[in-house]
Amino acid sequence: LAGLCLALGCLCGADKLLSRSHEWKKLIIVQHWPATVCEEVQNDCSDPPDYWTIHGLWPDKGGECNRSWHFDLDEIKDLLPEMKAYWPDIIHSSPNRSRFWRHEWEKHGTCAAQVDALNSQRKYFGKSLALYKQLDLNSKLLKFGLKPSINYYHILDFKDALTRVYGVIPKIQCLPPEQGEDVQTIGQIELCLTKEDQRLRNCTEPGERPAGVAAQGRELAVCEDGPVFYPPPRRAWHGQKQGKPTVL
Ligand SMILES: *[C@@H]1O[C@H](CO)[C@@H](O)[C@H](O)[C@H]1NC(C)=O
Ligand SMILES: *[C@@H]1O[C@H](CO)[C@@H](O)[C@H](O)[C@H]1NC(C)=O
Ligand SMILES: *[C@@H]1O[C@H](CO)[C@@H](O)[C@H](O)[C@H]1NC(C)=O
Image 1 (cartoon, rainbow, N blue to C red):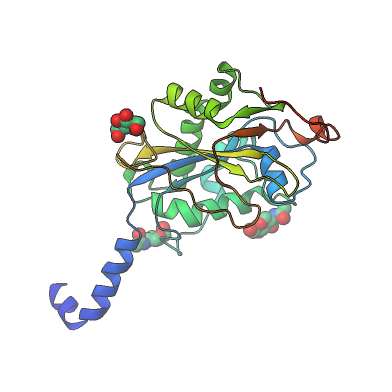
Image 2: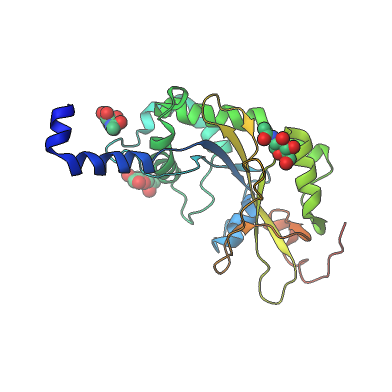
């Protein structure tokens, strides 16, 4: 192999560069709030779940690490009831759940598969569901009195609650205010996990502040300090939004 690499020096170098760009350091379990996703993608979700659902389990770097490893629904047949409940496709307007799962597997799962605990589709989706249940975000938020409301919270209510419950620094993303509105809407909560054993860790490195990427148009970005709207599923608050909610 060494001889071959000498002969094909630059090819081997390129290969090494490529695999290095797929190297990742932590996993991110991403959960989103369906009512906000519906708003973000302008999807007329008629009856979005009223609980946080899974968006994905993402290595912090890389994507589509193995384009020949195709999604196979058969491999996760036994997980389907939980997949449908906890990992529904909120993003696409004519939901085709296997399309969403396929995308998550091909973009992120094939990279996550570098670690043994995630090196098959069954393991990748199974572990994601297990983490979702273990983290139990929905009841943790409730325990801190954080439930969807037409009144606003402060983003620190979420940060503090999550940091206390999980003992690590999360990343919280919001949909910026619409023109003429004055408040951001909570949309996504990311919790980070170690690569080796998928245990909770800070999303930031020691000394690092959470990175804020400026929002391009109306898409999720790290929340600003200040009030935040945690919207009840659309049916419940439609028509009430015109009124001026008060900050809780
Ligand atoms: C990519 O996935 C295919 C199908 O599972 C597998 O045979 C192959 O070894 C993988 N390639 C790499 C580089 O892991
Ligand atoms: C869902 O999408 C897959 C391809 O991504 C396609 O094969 C399948 O037929 C679609 N199912 C429905 C119900 O549209
Ligand atoms: C996580 O962040 C908190 C607050 O900055 C810090 O006190 C703690 O030591 C960090 N944990 C690790 C493992 O870096």
